[in-house]
Image (cartoon, rainbow, N blue to C red):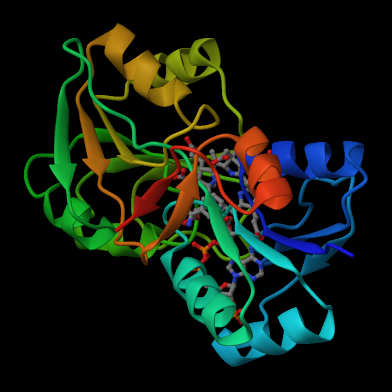
Length: 253
Ligand code: 3Y8
Ligand code: NAP
């Protein structure tokens, strides 16, 4: 009897949950519990951390998980590291469902930063009006550059105000639209967009809007991920569940 543990929190994870439910494949989708009202899912959901690698190994064994699918966001590096370690220890096959990194087009004005902290350091200089579309968890890093006016976008209203002297706050969850992001940038007079290289469609709108408006983008490159089998389409996960392999799948390194 198959039981898939699906580490979620992305558009692709939700799409896979629907395919698993339609296929009658037993699955549990897992959220960290970062947001107040996570999207409802067509499969049972577990919310909260597992308690490190050991806790995840225990979970895999106690719930007789037969397949572990890591469909977390490309910046959820700690969860992905734990998934790889726990799957190995528990002898449970692991597959990552992730998105290719975005690539700039000839019409894009990207510069790169290697991390969130490096992106804050790259903002030294004269005051600007910056769309900081990174969510809530890393806003404090930008207190190092208080001269800017930041447009913040959070999923939920914060319990404590951000520690920035000049900011505007939008509370909204994606997926976002190009029209909506373009209007937001024009309304706030944005002259720079800071973004994680999340990939996928759910957060891409701001990049397309920036391109249309001729705005520069400071793109934060992805953290390193453990070596693991990776696919980019939810349908490829079904093939893996049925056959244990995916033709042409990438082994991320
Ligand atoms: C809790 C689950 C679905 C998944 C939807 C995707 C798309 C919309 C775009 C911007 C960028 C950002 C942020 C973002 C997007 C999708 C996807 C994606 C970026 C939810 C969700 C959870 C989270 C956690 C949240 C983080 C934050 C990051 C906002 C649900 C809605 C900025 C990432 O307030 C907080 O603490 C938010 C924390 C981690 C990053 C951060 O550092 O703040 N995602 N986002 C998951 C859990 O608990 O396990 O509430 O429904 C999921 C989605 N967010 O099924 O429809 O597939 O990526 N999420 C980034 O890309 O930079 C917004 O504003 O332009
Ligand atoms: P992270 O830093 O990689 O993980 C920190 C800890 O959070 C993990 O060690 C684990 O706790 C717990 N955790 C993370 N994802 C979990 C999940 N899906 N189910 C159960 N526990 C989880 O993670 P993060 O970057 O904060 O991301 C948290 C969630 O938000 C993930 O679901 C991710 O897909 C989603 N998300 C993140 C981003 C982003 O920009 N980081 C963007 C969109 C969505 P224990 O050690 O206790 O097990």
